[in-house]
Length: 88
Image (cartoon, rainbow, N blue to C red; front, side):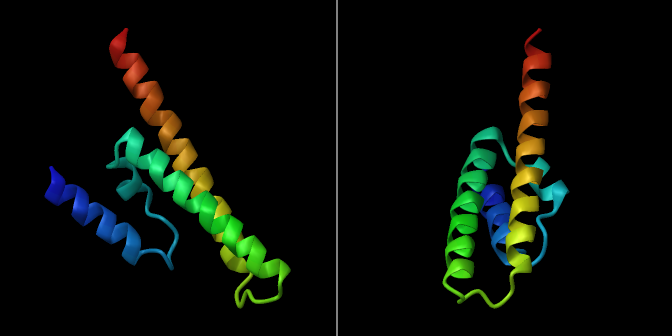
Protein backbone atom coordinates (compact mmCIF):
# COMPACT_ATOMS: atom_id res chain seq x y z
CA UNK A 1 0.00 0.00 0.00
CA UNK A 2 2.76 2.45 0.92
CA UNK A 3 4.57 1.81 -2.35
CA UNK A 4 1.47 2.50 -4.43
CA UNK A 5 0.76 5.63 -2.39
CA UNK A 6 4.29 6.85 -3.03
CA UNK A 7 3.88 6.28 -6.75
CA UNK A 8 0.60 8.18 -6.84
CA UNK A 9 2.04 11.10 -4.88
CA UNK A 10 5.10 11.13 -7.15
CA UNK A 11 2.87 11.34 -10.22
CA UNK A 12 0.95 14.21 -8.66
CA UNK A 13 4.18 16.08 -7.96
CA UNK A 14 5.35 15.52 -11.54
CA UNK A 15 2.07 16.78 -12.95
CA UNK A 16 2.23 20.01 -10.97
CA UNK A 17 2.61 22.01 -14.18
CA UNK A 18 -0.35 20.24 -15.74
CA UNK A 19 -3.89 20.24 -14.44
CA UNK A 20 -4.50 17.52 -11.90
CA UNK A 21 -5.71 14.29 -13.43
CA UNK A 22 -9.14 13.32 -12.14
CA UNK A 23 -8.40 9.61 -12.35
CA UNK A 24 -5.33 10.01 -10.16
CA UNK A 25 -7.29 12.04 -7.64
CA UNK A 26 -10.03 9.42 -7.50
CA UNK A 27 -7.45 6.85 -6.42
CA UNK A 28 -6.56 8.88 -3.34
CA UNK A 29 -8.27 8.40 0.00
CA UNK A 30 -10.22 11.07 1.86
CA UNK A 31 -7.35 12.06 4.15
CA UNK A 32 -4.97 12.33 1.18
CA UNK A 33 -7.47 14.52 -0.65
CA UNK A 34 -7.76 16.79 2.38
CA UNK A 35 -3.97 17.06 2.48
CA UNK A 36 -3.88 17.83 -1.25
CA UNK A 37 -6.53 20.51 -0.78
CA UNK A 38 -4.51 22.13 2.01
CA UNK A 39 -1.40 22.06 -0.18
CA UNK A 40 -3.26 23.70 -3.08
CA UNK A 41 -4.78 26.39 -0.84
CA UNK A 42 -1.30 27.21 0.46
CA UNK A 43 -0.02 27.34 -3.12
CA UNK A 44 -2.88 29.68 -4.09
CA UNK A 45 -2.00 31.95 -1.18
CA UNK A 46 1.60 32.05 -2.34
CA UNK A 47 0.58 32.77 -5.94
CA UNK A 48 -1.70 35.61 -4.88
CA UNK A 49 1.08 37.10 -2.78
CA UNK A 50 3.48 36.89 -5.72
CA UNK A 51 0.86 38.45 -8.00
CA UNK A 52 0.33 41.34 -5.61
CA UNK A 53 4.03 42.03 -5.39
CA UNK A 54 4.45 41.80 -9.16
CA UNK A 55 6.73 38.74 -9.07
CA UNK A 56 4.34 36.22 -10.65
CA UNK A 57 5.47 35.33 -14.18
CA UNK A 58 2.34 33.46 -15.24
CA UNK A 59 -0.95 34.75 -13.73
CA UNK A 60 -2.79 31.80 -15.30
CA UNK A 61 -1.31 29.65 -12.51
CA UNK A 62 -3.84 31.25 -10.16
CA UNK A 63 -6.76 30.09 -12.31
CA UNK A 64 -5.26 26.60 -12.70
CA UNK A 65 -4.77 26.27 -8.95
CA UNK A 66 -8.33 27.42 -8.23
CA UNK A 67 -9.66 24.81 -10.64
CA UNK A 68 -7.47 22.12 -9.10
CA UNK A 69 -8.89 23.02 -5.67
CA UNK A 70 -12.40 22.69 -7.10
CA UNK A 71 -11.53 19.28 -8.59
CA UNK A 72 -10.18 18.04 -5.27
CA UNK A 73 -13.23 19.31 -3.37
CA UNK A 74 -15.61 17.69 -5.86
CA UNK A 75 -13.88 14.31 -5.66
CA UNK A 76 -13.69 14.59 -1.86
CA UNK A 77 -17.46 15.10 -1.72
CA UNK A 78 -17.94 12.10 -4.03
CA UNK A 79 -15.77 9.96 -1.75
CA UNK A 80 -17.71 11.10 1.32
CA UNK A 81 -21.04 10.38 -0.38
CA UNK A 82 -19.82 6.95 -1.44
CA UNK A 83 -18.68 6.04 2.08
CA UNK A 84 -21.91 7.34 3.63
CA UNK A 85 -23.90 5.40 1.04
CA UNK A 86 -22.08 2.19 1.84
CA UNK A 87 -22.77 2.63 5.57
CA UNK A 88 -26.54 2.62 5.07
